[in-house]
Length: 461
Ligand SMILES: C[C@H](N)C(=O)N[C@@H](Cc1c[nH]cn1)C(=O)O
Image (cartoon, rainbow, N blue to C red; front, top):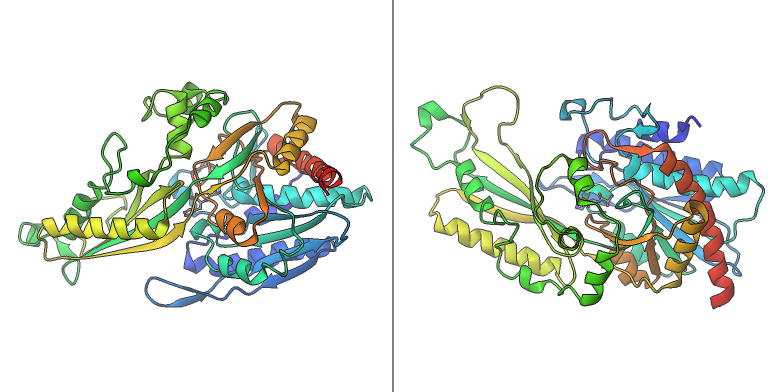
């Protein structure tokens, strides 16, 4: 196939983290709505209000697309959630091809957002289209909820879900999310995600940037302060140093330990895939546990720091570190916000610096965990068996789907994550891709799932 829909979607630079790209993001939401409208869905573009930027300005949030195919009260209703915003990408980051021009190389479709999450959303759409093309009645009512702010924490979506709980979600039985990946070549069903608390730590000093030769040695540099406090977040062995964080983590049970042992995961492959000689842990179980169910600190970047080619000799006047802490049961983002803010101010005060520190938490997403005994998982296993002829791995996901926990807490519905992304898709990274195999077989799997989930209805109603 030509994958024309995916090509058109990838061509839209729907980067939700870049305010300059907001028109592209609005266009992307219109495009998704139009696709569903043309298929005969009952479609709405729901206004979810404004986003407040750190500088106090406001910006219109991308509308949320909802769609409905069928409303037969005798059928079960599934709701597919997905997102069509993407992480930033530019050739300069080291892409081999233009990130916004879907490029087919050896059966892999390269492009920003190909795997995260445009192809999986389209695969669900194609699954509905397949029933339509074959003039087959959909075995379940299918709803879609597609957002454009997932990559920046799903701003505005929670309020919409609360407002729609007894309207759009009233007849929904199951919520399905396909915004993650397999762990190996073996298909997987996902029953947990980590949450994420994302912080800005700003240090402000002189009123403008200074020449390091002329002023170096006379001023207390904001960047030196910032590196100093960042270095107190986590030690070289991965131990988080912020008091209270490790204590909140639910202990690993014997049952979990056993489950992890059975999962197909090759440490050597994993090392090769990411190009490292050594990992933080040497056993499969330790590694999976630290990927899925322990917190970690990642330092992402420093705004205001010199990062171009060349040898600029500046002392930056104001620098803002961006770091995040992945959340696991039983951590609470509100508590983590206080723990981090208090700790950084304490550490900074010990430096006796005249500079000013400001700590802000800009995303506070909770972790999500499902009951794998729920019939939605049985249906998932059956659909995988039918299409791939294997039993899936039951896995967790180290990344975050910020809205998953809200769906669970607000709607009370069962949630299943059904990834079709490959383990080596390079999400958020250079050369992100979705393989043709996963895209096409994944679509078949979704078609099969709609059938399997309708069978649950017959036995459990
Ligand atoms: C799993 C999903 N495709 C994803 O990548 N989610 C992002 C969401 C996020 C969390 N904090 C900021 N954005 C992720 O896990 O990084």
